[in-house]
Image (tube, rainbow, N blue to C red; front, side):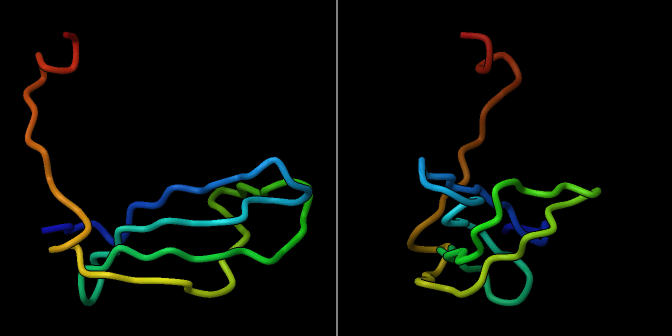
Length: 80
């Protein structure tokens, strides 16, 4: 269902350092929703050309069948 490798969202809390959490929908092996934490305390995130700060460890994972869904929308629904 999630044919791309992974879709991710970074959570950057108002604390020193780079992002603190990463949420991903991973479709590579078993389709999983995953929550990762990042322990690095860099002040900036490097994008050269992609994110250079990998998350450090997984906190939680669950099946996309239980924790993700696909919503089909038409092009015109976006402008309502």
